[in-house]
Image (tube, rainbow, N blue to C red; front, top):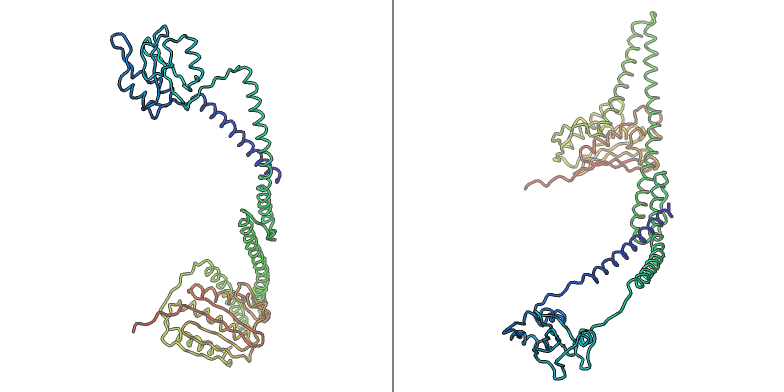
Length: 465
């Protein structure tokens, strides 16, 4: 793959060089062969050749003889040039500003010689025609020079092609060397990026070396971030999968127990020798186990609806301190907790919150019951309401550090709950209900010193004075 990328870059660069050479050659030929001639826009802006060619516009025929107009004389003076007009025999029939050394008759060979070469007085000659006359314009010390080269096109073509081929080969070799270096430097990190992506696809989340520099440094940095994120997600997925497997095992055990009771007592009820009192006791056990299984299924349905946000809240303005005090009273009226030490502290008697009273009561009861059940028989529980928090604290045995972050997970049961009957969903349901109200819940614990669960909400708006 690496050399494949390098080869592609190299071929691309060589093709670009060849195309540039061909285009430049074509443009050079077009420029040389089709050089546009300048327009005659007056003396100052015209070349001597153009000035000579366009000077016929200043000539007239009067009484059968050529005459220079005043504009033409002014143009010659402005151009610092002189003029001679010749008839068909080469005789000078008119002139203007011609030097004394200028001859009065020109043979054809004289005209050819003067057109080709500068004379001893450094005049450059330009020749054109008007009607049946010819005219010669001399420009002393002209910046324009005329050079003549004799070429044989056939003999010139072969060396030119060789030179062009040599230039092309040399440029291609240089381009290949530079392209090889460039493409190697460019393709190496690209190959590394492709390998890095393939590594992530194989679920290999090891980070790439940190010493990457250059234009791809940010790419490798982002790939490392992606790798770390995927690694965390994979660990979370494996942890949740393990938790799910454990919970399914626990749930299966919890369901097998009431199902076994229901089946056993149902078989006993078919016995004709069972008394009416025994039948009533067996029916009560079956009913109790059925209720437990119904509650378990309801909790499963509730937690799924809370997670999918498919449970609309029936919000009511509620005085939170009164609400929490009544909840503590309900707990103390439960025969299971009647003898337990539960303390209520209220510090926000006027605080109103928008709550779904039914769901929030269930969430707080789950938290309080969890504190009472798992803190130990001798532990006390305090429920305190403040302006921004509701705190449920106990001074029981606490939660091991390895279990603290998992307390609010679905399906999780801690080490102190192995002998406790439950679904493993109570704390997760409590958290989901609290979050659905726009609040947050945190847990702090220390072994031997108890556990504190804190529910927080936004600070209330100041009351108008």
